[in-house]
Amino acid sequence: MDGKKVRFFIPLFVCGLLACVSAQAAVIEISAMLAYSTSDFEDGYHSLQRRYTGTIDFKFTPVSALEFEYTDSTTRITFPTTLGGYIALPTRQVTNYKDQVYSFNWVQNLVSTKWILQPYFVIGGGKMHRVVTVDLPEYRYSEKSSQNLTTGTGGLGVRLFMTKAMAVKAEAKTYVPEFRFSKWKENQMLSLGLSWAF
Image 1 (tube, rainbow, N blue to C red):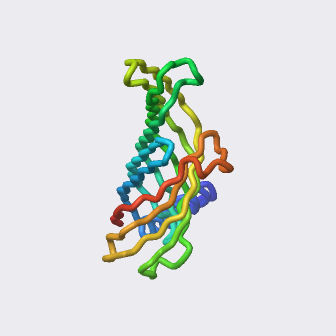
Image 2: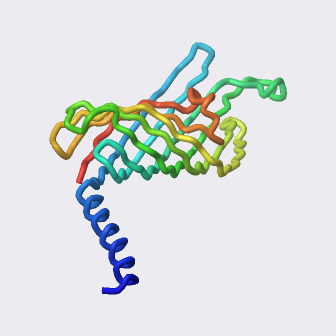
């Protein structure tokens, strides 16, 4: 065997060996989560939030994963207004935020995968498509606008494994347009759901 063939064969063998190791270590986890909250205040202010999240995690080590996430989120805010005095009689303004988030995240376990209770953190980023609708129902007025924004994601979660393959998940996560993590409180929610590992 000449030198050229040896130089070609060794990297090919090493890549094949690494692929075998990765194939044995790799695990896919699929999750589905839901968040819902509603608030009422004395001044007539009312808010409702609902969030659906689906994720696919590709674990390249037992405690680390790359995650693809899709989130569909709706926020509805209603409050009495006169629009700064432009309307003679008080009316209600309804503002809806409809967000679709596609993100790529790093998920890191904080304990061994042998534990039944496994806390973890998530950080990443992606794209958010936001549609904002402002309505004055009594005046049949509606205004709609849309935005495409980069967004940062971050959060903490915990898995409680019921079986070797299925876990109950709780996750507190925020989505911040333009990676402004100083405003994380504006869009954070606690989600609950299930995950399955394959």
